[in-house]
Image (cartoon, rainbow, N blue to C red):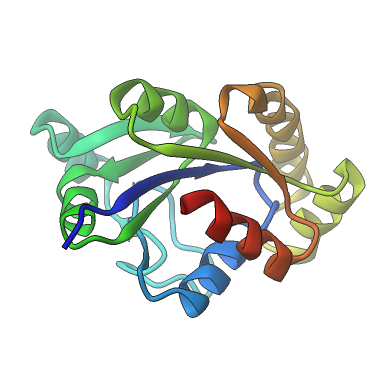
Length: 182
């Protein structure tokens, strides 16, 4: 069995990263999402261990001190991290290990993992992104404004990624991702 492929996938909040990853996993059984750790509260319908590993700040900080994470960053007032052992296990199994991480974490991970394929997902437009974030119905107006400001900042560094993919249609986006990992 050959070693898997590490993919770093980033993009602004609301661009459809989870939707794209879920569609890609449904199409390709070799695709595995590395489930990140976070200190934020779970949103409605999120499942611990599936969407994120939800932990308290003290547990997160202890894991970070023990070297359990490839990288970790504070984003939107909460910690997020990539579990190193989970990622390595997927790669050893020959999987396409997807790291869905924010730009800050991605830039750190890129420095640590030159073997990673890096992809930045872009929205078709800022108006579309705004509509997607509002359509969730999970954030108040102040949070939406913060996410949109952060989206502009994140999109400003998209050229640091090997590939930029506009997520206009999920199936087309998955087609592109499949071609990129070959």
